[in-house]
Length: 201
Image (cartoon, rainbow, N blue to C red):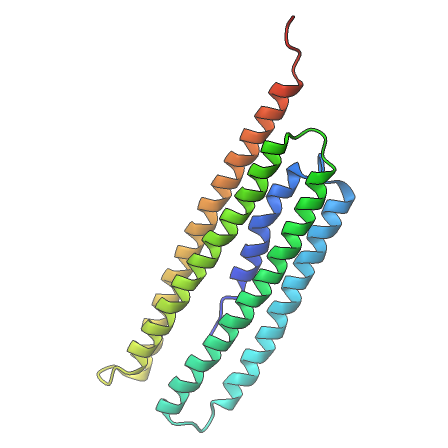
């Protein structure tokens, strides 16, 4: 079962655009930090891919009921791992942003506070979104797995269609946050430009 670890990548990348404001352009240091975070995410992704491969091998020879129980437990375990990993990455991103904002002379204290609040708000939206999807995923999987009227092929197709729809839902969520990010960037940029403009006196 694919855990859609790409959602972890989403969690990181959605947090990154706000850094544009933090260091008056970001520079090599900001680029280096983002690269470092992406590498951590990729390493986590590869680790879970290996875990999944090993897990699928362990299902051989089990009864259908044993498989359902094992898959449910495995999904729950990886969901917990992902949640913990995303929190760690978020904390690092937040600490980095706080450090960069502390050295920023172009933004007001109110703007700095707005940016940190915005980042936290988007992160919490992601936590809620992923939690809801995980609950729905488990419920749907158990429903299909326990449906005695469906053949294995029908179950496979039903799950494939379901997760395809979930992928689209994630895509829409990501796009919505990108729009919010862009709007926030433009708002702050406009305010900074207005503050820097001559008063006309």
